[in-house]
Image (cartoon, rainbow, N blue to C red; front, side, top):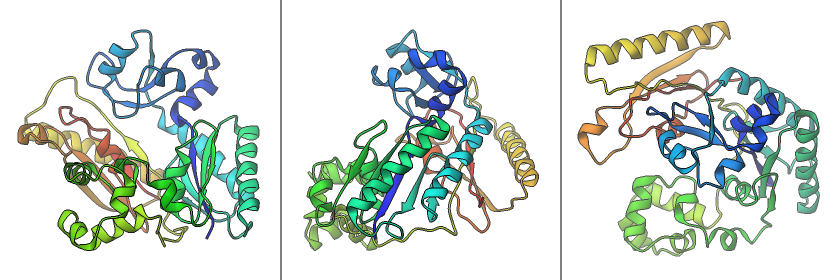
Length: 336
């Protein structure tokens, strides 16, 4: 298998720059209120020079860069650009698994069975996306999804990283374990405490050490991924498109009835969103963010909606929710 992971560079910020070219020259942050409790959704590469990134509080971003320009996310606009990008990509590579509005996997092997040809094909995808949308994207090309995803982040923006067969484990080995897909904050903390701070060290764990630190099938799965072993095929019938709705309260709200009213109101808005697009959902759940403090854990919730026949992945929203804020992001996954 030859697969590529495509990641649109600083997508929300890049779209805002296309809509207003003057923003290209300033530190641009797409997110919430910097004077309140907003969170950074993304930042352009000028802002990233100030060590500003996704999931950071907007207040901290403002402290790091007082002259930054903040804009609120416009998800409808981003969705339009996203649809155009993926329509263009499918003209070059027919088999695509979308993992979100700004990322997805491409089956290069069905068109280019050799790695040299696959590299040229990936370059062609970059060129056509740039020519027709003026958006840049970075790609990682490898024999598996996990390696391709890590590779796509190595040379941003507009980068291309190719990991040839037999080089997967060596490529992954130096990176910190948090970069391995499937390693969450708790697993990272547990492994780091045991001295396993790189993907390479995870790959060399014995069965006994592995089962002690990550028991069951999860441990074996993570060690396989650390070795570059990932047999997952592209899931073209269950591609996920995330549509987010998030609100941040200016002050903490501890009244359960008021919180329930807010959740019902947001659920109603999302239901209307689904109806207008002819989509359906199976489940709606609430998920609090991870926090060391029980009190702060109770002060925040994540609403998660799953649409049939697809699944919903709200991990991105959850990771962007600060334990001390009232964020209610709802992500809906649907077929296009």
